[in-house]
Amino acid sequence: MPKFHVKDTFTVEGRPHFVLAGSVVEGEIRPGMFVRVPFNSSTALTARIDCIEFARRLGGHEDTCLCIRCTEPEELEIWRGLDIGDETFEVTTDGSD
Image (cartoon, rainbow, N blue to C red):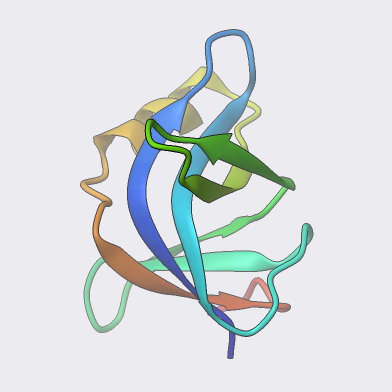
């Protein structure tokens, strides 16, 4: 199963995306797949990956960025409120939990 390690998260002004920046740990990740962010053993937030982009950091290192489209401002606020960072998440082809 593909896995993605999140180093950082951010939004880009004027774009309806919440961005998970980091690196692919295992497998292949493509747009249309789903990232699963668990809250506890029985509850998780699952979101479709809209597109994959790249962000260059100081020093030349490049992060893979999984972009999650948020159609409502409230969705962006929910994602911003999550404390995601230095965590590894499963990525699936199916959006069900």
